Length: 216
Image (tube, rainbow, N blue to C red):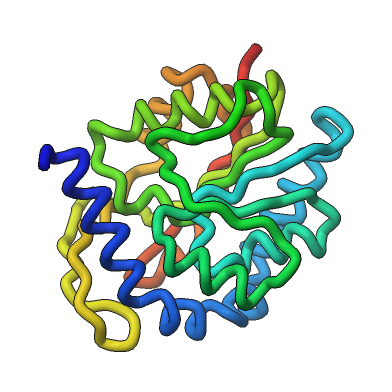
């Protein structure tokens, strides 16, 4: 197994293992996060403004809580996740919504088929050398002018996570990145970076949200 297959397999297995406990932890997570809700509301507005709406992919959707929130905001959102068990949990918790197993490194979506795309803290396990491939797929599946929303941990280090939600074993690297570095990757992939929001600056795990748009 090469390095690319290994980190994908480790991520899939880790989240299959913790899926039920992870869903329990995040079920009401957005209720106490006003800035995240505001960012998602703005993203929903941008989707409607860009091309009158259309399908939106929540890539790395986990248990589907963000996908469901976007649907409540009137967005035609569906979820994609690497973990089959996580997708089972998302379908259980949000019946009637669309969830699919898939990888952001090879999105099985038609070119220019999406009105918007978000990856909300789902890039954190993607190694640096795979990020350009991921962003190339994001650009490919977005319509010209379509908005992209990214959320991620801020920092300079990568750590190995060996125990996760509910005390279950995991084997994933968590990558923290500076917003300017992520923005450079986006520009190189064919996006215009429009706005940045920094979160929890005085906490141990600050975050960032970037709003970008696919260039024609």
